Length: 63
Image 1 (spheres, rainbow, N blue to C red):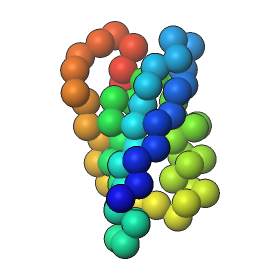
Image 2: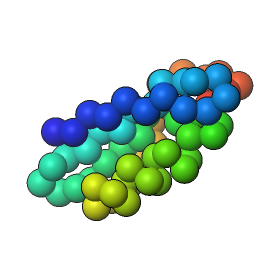
Image 3: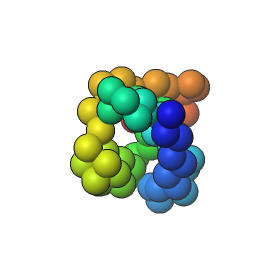
Image 4: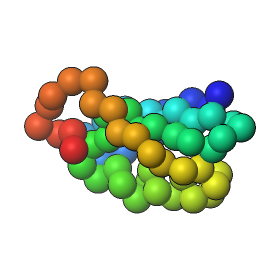
């Protein structure tokens, strides 16, 4: 399992990426505004397939 913490966006939110090393399927947890470039860059660099977005709570600064 891959677990990557990405601090991003104007409010420096914590966004997490969880992935399976075998299948390369991944899920982004609580993406925030301004986080897409960092997330996409990590996904491409590691040949992952982003297939889910999980929002754990509702805030104005999350997508």
